[in-house]
Image 1 (cartoon, helix red, strand yellow):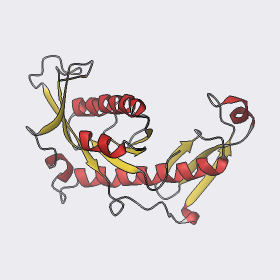
Image 2 (tube, one colour):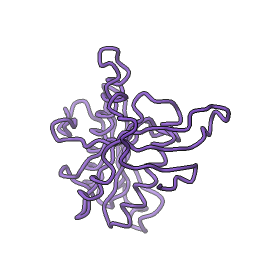
Image 3 (cartoon, one colour):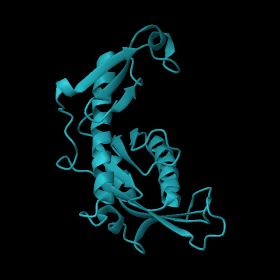
Image 4 (cartoon, one colour):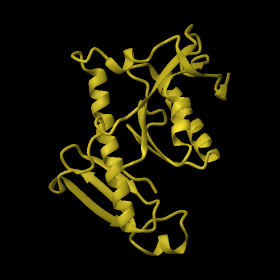
Length: 211
């Protein structure tokens, strides 16, 4: 279970090409494995849950090693690989930014209740018999934006509601970041924050081997 005191990281391709979005996908997979090794609670919210290669994501971490994890990842992550989408493309260096999200930057989870629609349903999949026989899963829709999130990880409906609120806040934050990156007025701030040549981590190939 996560809380509002969780450490938050923004993983973003900025306005980079599809290869950078693939790098986001690979980085999230690497982060999940590392968080499991460090026994951290790990939760991710994708800017586009239906996309295999999302442009960006918010990662929430909690546990004793969360700060160590963040210090290792925050900065520019470089992926050196031939494009999986453009075989003859000469470029082989792709960059993704990992930034801490401060409490001041994050969208508050105290949203207007009038703009929220909660629905409960019976959760399936892992979780045991209790999860399958109670309406503990929650779907939360933000009516002004149409953004919907689902939480089914907890057996408690109350905890799933709290998790859904956090995920909605993260989705709204991601939506704002993407809009800023695409805005002419912002001059693609996120993309420019990816400091090429100063990568904190570097991975190679489709197998994403750390170098």
